[in-house]
Figure 1 (cartoon, rainbow, N blue to C red):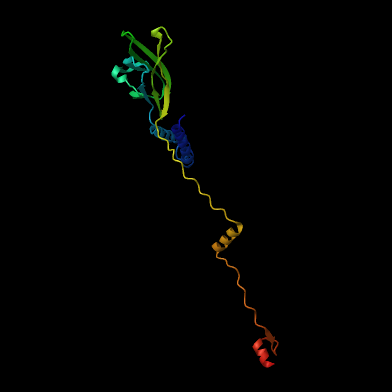
Figure 2 (cartoon, rainbow, N blue to C red):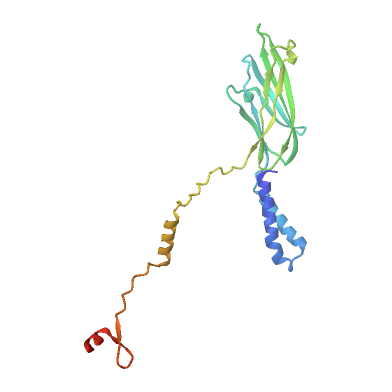
Length: 233
């Protein structure tokens, strides 16, 4: 299961837990499941359909030239080529592309080549290969047939063969952006932290209060200011 399928499944699960409790009284279970299925199908529709790309590849022997080729998908002829369309000298060249239905498929590729012997005589041979593969939404398949030459084989009819494989590739782009690192707060000593906490609450150190003035006892037994007591003396 590709990532897009997993995302669609998670979306459907979330919708179930969000929608079901609030609407269970008004709707039947079948109606709720139908809504979830519709949301799942809508998510699937955004996933690209599987594709198939076929490439021609360079030939190692300069005395051999491609003459023609054909491609069959699931037993049905889908494309034919002339020699010039199959010629490439430095890197693989895409020669055919199509969309496929999800599921199992079989591709058959047949190429015909013409070779020139050392004494000028020309010969023609055909090689083919069949490969089975799975097509899935969100994935493309690339096939690159390559002519293989066995120089040790004496029988020239068995000297040539075609090799290829179905290589998958992602169709949807993946965001590989690395998020910025999380900045850690600076390490502070306990006394610094305590000082900041005090400033935040607006508290300040208590100020020294003025010493109380000395008092003397008056005639009626009440306290009198010191100045009055000294005056009476």
